[in-house]
Image 1 (cartoon, helix red, strand yellow):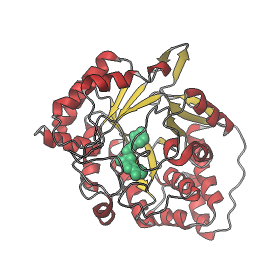
Image 2 (cartoon, rainbow, N blue to C red):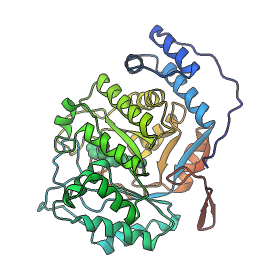
Image 3 (tube, helix red, strand yellow):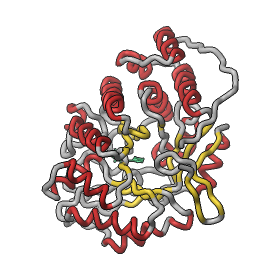
Image 4 (cartoon, protein in one colour):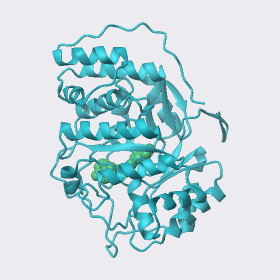
Length: 383
Ligand code: V47
């Protein structure tokens, strides 16, 4: 059961100097669905406080003052990747000097290094390795489950699942069944980038296309696994591409209900083939959180991933539509290869402090948003 806390504070009324936001506010207050054009108006409005006010209204209606975090550990088993995505600073071609691929024992041991904080989730994402067999990934998951049976395994993006199915010469539906048998509990939301073909051809031409990503998510949800969804923004996409991306996710969610959390990811240009582009600004990050909350009316959670936007911005986001700031992470490679200046990981008490200072009530959650209660070095999950 998810924790909820109704909010008893009285609400101030909506005010804006942007007439385009007036009809949108009426819809938001009435709980009505927003349109494509509403999405564009939200991206183009100069009144960020009014946009944030609406997003905060929705966020508090859904979660009161609660703000979620988890104690997790990222594991990136390999950086060898057949794709050559211009957006990426992490992937390497086989044979290059700074490649790595974890032996299974090494991956299992690395996973245990975060257990001093009793992690409740392993988040596993990696390159599309040309030679690793399907069974390497299943053994990786099976070995983790054997060694850490209480830890939820959130593994493999839609892009990896489609690739693994090809490697294993099986359908995507079969690959998903095999993943479930091995012990995968849910899937992360990466690889979605921007669904529009025009943009996808430039930033990640070698990945499955947008409709394949969405179809793989549908299959996953149909098989009973939940997943997250992401959007990579702040590169060459425009407002129409962003709204299109969000509404395509909303459409799948109407059908399956299988998405758990939406995570907007700000593009980090360093060491990528798009290194000439500037980093997104704080205003863009905050707006992206708010617009996501407003358009994705059927998503329970909007995550402001502190690794991406910095702990400072994640804190502010909790007043602009976000209800989650992700977890301890411990060791992050994908954005740090692309120039992220944030720490590799944060401790549990740092996350609690960030949330409390923002005037919200911290709730440690597991991956499926059950509240976690801790005593000394063990934890229990309220289901
Ligand atoms: O798909 C890659 C992004 C994603 C860069 O599900 C980059 O809870 C910025 O999906 N600059 C992988 N972003 C990470 C991911 C994720 C992260 C946190 C939580 C969850 C979750 C999922 O990272 C990739 C891509 O969109 N990425 N390179 C870059 N240079």
